[in-house]
Image 1: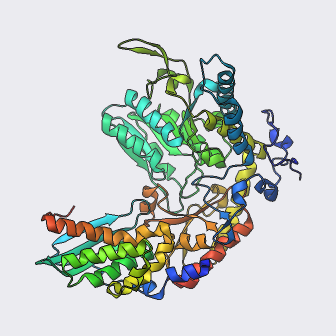
Image 2: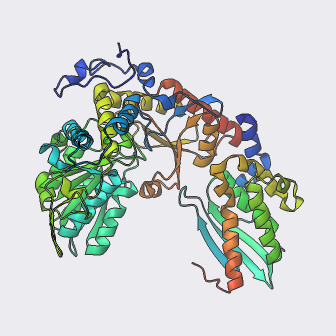
Image 3: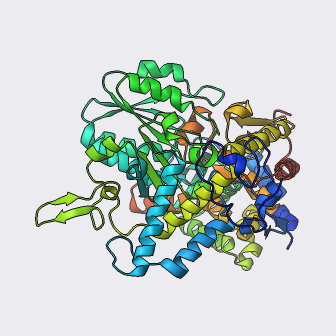
Length: 443
Length: 153
């Protein structure tokens, strides 16, 4: 398998069903050449506490390939100007870059209605807040119901709590089973004439569980409700085709998929966006402003008040280009193979408790676990002294923690550049934990 | 200092001993002040209870859950608080905070007793707040005791 000589973005590929077959990294079913990919990521090549960095915190944020860094630098060095309505050359170029990035990302997720359906935001959290405030504020009233799940990240809970408090709407929950899956058999009972919206994550950040979005979408549609999908972990770790998913809103972030922080997107069906009131007021989002009222710009600008994160959008499109070049399906298979290996190795610890589905095929690259003998913080500190970066805490998913009776877990999360050797180092680090804290009750 | 040395200085036996077998853990009968304190970024939590009689801490107990550093620290702290005047408790909190912020003289201060074992935490900046969780509760408890505002939150 060969990679381009230069460690930059794979050449732009045209959108077609067999694009992966022509991507430089190989055909769709070929394993990733991880060592070649790693050369694209400057941050991976450093020592931490005297050891080579093993970055296993990708569900929090991902490292950036040279292609993204170059896109950001290139924009600021050559094209930086404010977008839209500028007459001068740099403004024209900046607008072209910004709107070109929108086209690229809209195309990548297969937005059925094209670029008008792709709103730039600060990230998944803002995308969901936009829907909760704008759609929710205009459409919810006392007694209406929103169905959430116990699996949600706080960013897909708190915005709904806020709008429920304002409107008198009621929140209902799909629960989790012991294996980290949604108890979707509860959904038909939760859906009724008052259900206006279901908000569910595509992939759990705390458990790794991949949810059957299409199945849920069909059920929700039968009941005349809308489906919002939190795609923060979805878009980064799972191929996304909006048409196939069948949802009404899809929220995702740039930084989870190798793009910059502070940029993300909301995809929504055009007719929904057209009917929704603006989220924030300001420049860019208006058509005509008068003393007491204004009219709104056409989509997608109606939802983008103020000078946007232009360079961020450019960087996110470069990240999408890179991910698309590698092939999201191959990335997912790579992550699942690492998860399978990690689950196998972690089983060596008698007192370990692993959360989430036992079948790696039902997960993205997330492994959450707890040891009887040592708290997740202590585990993370000890691993860090060996250069292994994991996350410890509630992962902004306190309902998940409560469901499994823990206040925190340790979480290793993988991406396309992680290796089996890094999984071995995780396991070795847990050996050090064992040396210091002793075996737990279970062993 | 190599990371191995740092680790062994962080996880000294006395710390692990307090973590596994905490002192003064449980409810305090006739507490005069109860403070619940949590670290929202990690979920560590403690509930500290004091019984203050005439400006002296007659008894101190806690319940909590969290990492070895937060739980060992509060366990050690409760041992030291018993019998202390409020002003002495202030001084203890101040001295321990100095220790966490790298004041090496505090590490030799015998008044800190077992708490000196936590000196290694100062080399791990992200863990300092763990060690200070119990002392944050103590400061709040002292403040409320002085203000006469000892209603449980």
